[in-house]
Image 1: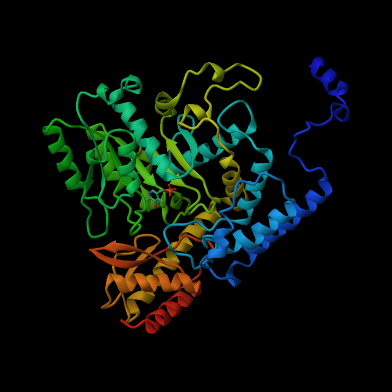
Image 2: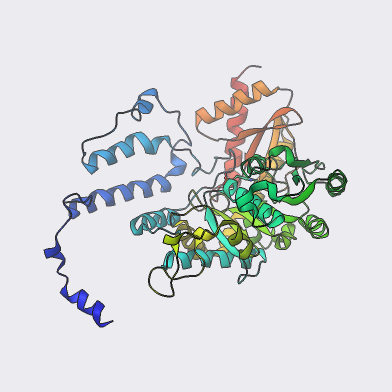
Length: 493
Ligand SMILES: *Cc1c(COP(=O)(O)O)cnc(C)c1O
């Protein structure tokens, strides 16, 4: 203690001077001015999102701006910021806009934007060591355990880029659990039998990719048929497991989906949990879209059984409205996660005090070593708005989806293509084929008023609207339908 006080009093920072190659501003006052102006512009960008086109195609000159040689010489920050204003901000994805309904994109919030700025300023490496970033991430993990029904003292949580990565980690953990920690060294030879996993035919493509990347192979992922509501059929799952066992395969994992990407269907999670328990399978839930809906008291009962899973992938950047990227993996027993990923590297050795303190670091729970402070924007979003308000925004997305469903059902030009389980509405233009429908969707994108995407249902292209943005209202759906009708009238068959 005495020593550090001595250090503090004896260091004269002026006298120490500056590195000749430092990258800090030489004029802090000028920097502040530039930075404040930029911050103002970003705030205006968010505040005026309704007044601007949802999306605009990038002119060729603009693309050319990003095909320049390596910049050897410095430029004034003000000039670089002008480039950002002129060449980047106008050509963003569009997902801030309330009528962006393509794919499943979150809308972000101003609070999340400020959080990203603070996180960048602090520039923490959240791979490990003893600092507050690790505690904030643990706090979010405890909150998710509480919300999703896990024991917060036993569970492990980890921020990753997105649910694609979270699902991949879950497959890897399930594999290591099934065939033993020695498989980390010996690979799949540790298994006496060929591993097989199960998910529904409506599962996201990243589950098959996770099987590829984990070395098990996507042909060892069994796609279980779904019912008319897009939910995994339990009778089929049981039959497939039975047949695989009879043929000498080793079933190890079942992945249920809480909100499918095509139609928002929720698999029967309780029944999957029963089968997983009886068959000794790891039960993972892909909750990329739906898991956070448990924050709505109204929607929560529909996810019953999620608390019986071994792991859950979820995306704060979708319905959580946290800015990209903020994927998350929650694992019921952190020990399983640690056994899969922890490495005994000498330079990562722990101590009981100092910066190297701490038993479990995030780098023990996944493959990333250096990691940013994704937890801050999530902690700030949840802290500022509270889970009730976020839950209400999620429930509102579903109400807006039902409103759109009713308008489509009542409209002579359109027909619904799938039941609306949650927040996704799929419909067709009556009597028109896939090629025509695709052109109409692209016309809408280019007009910049509303942006749905598409999917294939029963072999035909369907217009797909995913309601995720907290800014979207029923009136937006009226504007969307008007724009759609105009687009159809403009384009002959
Ligand atoms: C979006 C999505 C994913 C992939 O998540 P990313 O965050 O985009 O990596 C996986 N599963 C479902 C159901 C999704 O909707």
